Image (cartoon, rainbow, N blue to C red; front, side, top):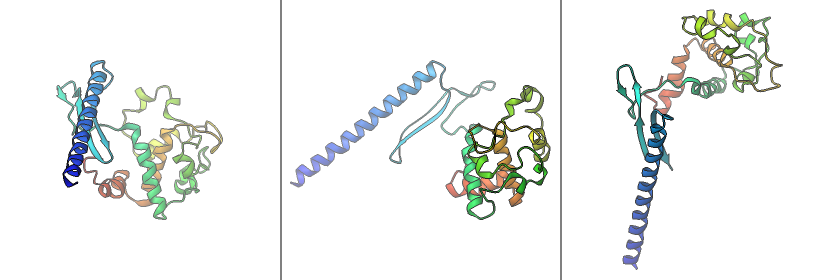
Length: 211
């Protein structure tokens, strides 16, 4: 009986190994195909049940200096920062520092009397604030995007903008809404956005390469 049990275990172990190899090979072929057709440059990691089954890197991290991507290359995450910012805000709510149902003007008095004054933190997080996105300004990229602003200077660019709709009635993606969330957290805590990210998320989750 022990002999058969041992053989059975060996068979399952071998089958699992072959299946993992098969998945790895298929994933590698998929990623190479995407890269070959200029549809993917970057790094990829695939895990199943907490176990890494594939990782790879494709294309160039810097074309000017001919630096290839590796599995340790750091990337700009762009708007992936929004859900992380939402998480950071909910941590401040959990600490009792901020209330989801208080308004922008409650935390940023300079918004008093402005169109966005009565928007709540909850509405900002859920993109239901009605606050417009920066692309309503046709010259945003050539005129504004590459300049350096303080937080106070930057909110003045959009704080007088009309709302796209009554807060809480619709969904509309807004980068300005999330900038406002970050600024509120800084004003309430007295810490920078990057400090809060490091202390409340990155350090606690072991994300030593994020910032």
